[in-house]
Image (cartoon, rainbow, N blue to C red; front, side):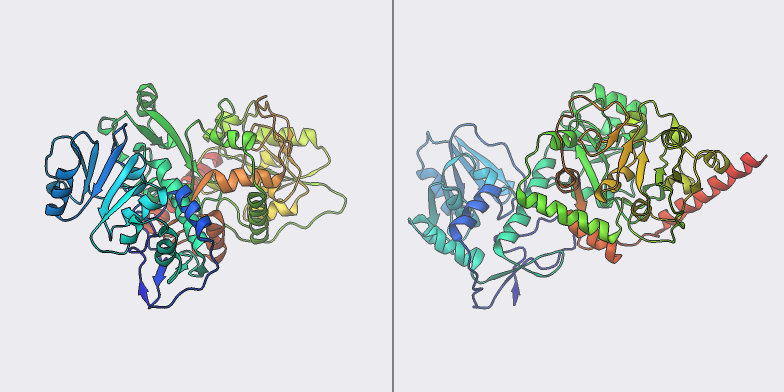
Length: 552
């Protein structure tokens, strides 16, 4: 078999660091007998604008209607350009700037370009008969003239598009899912390319990224890639603030953040995703999921975020809700949480007691500072829960970043046990949530994980999942949150539509189901590199020094 992964019409974008398996294979003279609706596939390709180098640059195009000329041979191109009416608006696409002759009334674009973008305003396309621009023009419906001999020569004639599309994209081509290496049909391949295109297009206006630690960049880069290098910036002076700036605000110096907020550029908030990795960010384990929000941080209830707008306004198809249900069930069955999965012995239950889990948080975390309301730290949260449920058996789980010695918010055990019955440390949050009868949180993601498992949740602050009819809310939920959602609608917004995920094996942006599968199978890549080991040692030393100081 002859692999045509990058020569076939449908192909994988060259995401930075990607290691994809074969996506498409041309069979040697054999036909894939697939019952494919050619017209429906053509419509889907046209809608999603996939095929060719759909990730490539999008140069400015004339506002008026224009003719695209794409001829490789210099002499033939010059002849065609000379024969075109001088008043016609002409754009000539060449392989390199050096091959672009200067002619009055003709503009030139060169290098790798998104062919769908080039054709978008064209009223005519003149192209070599073996250039896939011809196929794209025919799919779009732009009048086409093919020059010479080639696979697409017949597209100049009426009624040939379906036959040629089927022969070049459907028949004789076998597709494989790049994440699982399992066979895939043509429609699945088209939709996966559409998924990648949507991500790439959403990143095209990002001119810089600020506040991204060096150890995060390898996994974040593919998720912020817009077809060209991601410009990670360390100093404000290096920055072009005329475009959009992706910012990890918690790691951006206050002076730089203040200057950016006063500039003409628009800041885009970037944070860890809700299914993050198989290790702690505080231990420098890179994130395998991020959220990118152009309206505001999803955990700040003072502002509307893209996530809040999704939950409030989105209409979910039956297919999307079914997919959300399957994802929720997969997460629950596998025990996956934000920092991975696992198991450990659980406490023995006392008959007749109602068990309540109270997860601690990092007290200077942005989610706590923005959405914590009047809850003054972890000890105050415990005090509130005990007052609310005097007869409950309360389990308190310190935040793993605090336990690792990296962040603030630790509470002495003796103080915790004034309000909690037991402190649990080693058990994964997913197992604890399944064990207890209900969960009380300030803004912790553990509350969302409890909702996945259909456990009662009381929010004392204002997390993103409060106010939608699924939680008992004691915090000041914004009045604009008026929609009532069921758990699978919430999952559709929070886990399917909002975050971005990276497959650690292929290095490709992926659906959440793939990342959950990798975490369950232990395929999330190395966790104990030198940076991670040093960071963990630093945390243990800080924690030891703190305990020695407290003992004096």
